[in-house]
Image 1 (cartoon, helix red, strand yellow):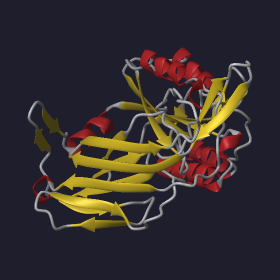
Image 2: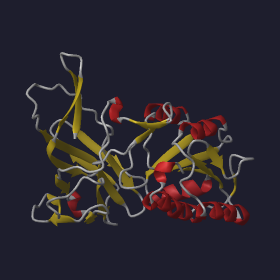
Image 3: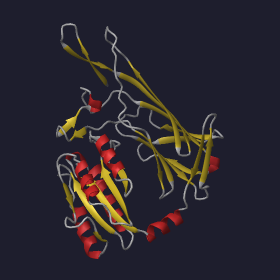
Image 4: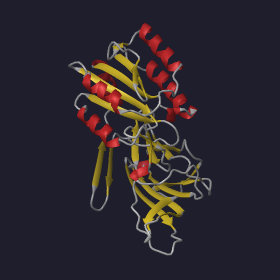
Length: 340
């Protein structure tokens, strides 16, 4: 619900709600670009007009995953409670006086057109919802949700797997715009990565909001995969954070990737729990900024979190300050992960 507060003539604060009746998402995907129209219908049952400020809490993300290769399209449908470091507790959404609700009486209609990209699309799937794909149109695939009464309890995720015979150059042309995408060759990228001195730092959210197994459990599984996939001769560290932060190797920013250090990391990961309190993300990032990487070293930071922090601008500004020496990749965990 969109919850409104208005001041009555007798200075009595009234709390009224404007029920959300309907949501319709109409999307068109052209390679790595998305044109999305989101329609929401509200009904005001009050006897007076209400002026409301509508706050969008996140942008729509279109991600390119090199592993498959796959284009991932995400429509956020949930707002998770956000931890405020200043208040040391949960902040109201968008700086309003609204309350979070655990369930909603409305459903969503979803229509997504995916351009066929000269038949370079190998598969369309969704890890979040059952979907139907209509192949009848010659220019695009039409993706809809299989269930008519789909609840807004998790983000809608559409994965578009590209064929191995695809071109590494993609062009999309509209009346007033032109988009050209050039993708580097995967083998060249791998050779460049192996020749560089790499430093990998894994920053893992172990705050109380990560308690669900689809959050802290996924973090454990992801970290074990990351650990096994690190290149030889690299350096690494694991930093858990909550109300404070705890590096695995406290005496050094990173250590060499060898059998002894890997065993320590595996033991830490296996026993990792969501037991560190609030979500104080700024502090471990400030520690990384203070301990900058050696000259000639490529530092890569992998952030595993459900988000849910209110000081997003401070986090992003700090990341910008480290951009010349550090690349930061964020991974959202759980069905309602917020975007930073």
